[in-house]
Image 1: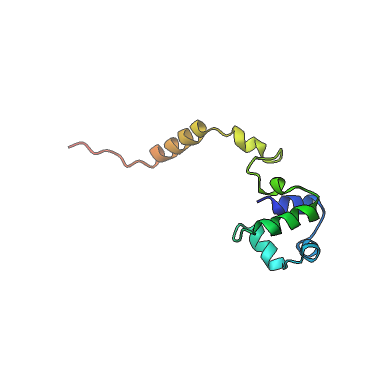
Image 2: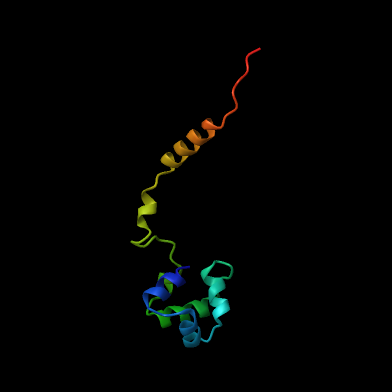
Length: 95
């Protein structure tokens, strides 16, 4: 959920947003940290207060700010992992 990103873009503090949508600051913090997931009705209230639509808040599509992450290929990641593993591989002892 992209609550924090859109809240900050709107220039709202957690307290400001909480007052507008009648939810506690602590609950909103838990949502932003991924510890809670609100029901559809609460997501709709958040979206309205932030001037967004429901789908904007729950979309898994990366926005422009995070889109460089989509260029990080799985191949590059696995190659890096393998090189790290080989650096720590135990030496083979011949008998």
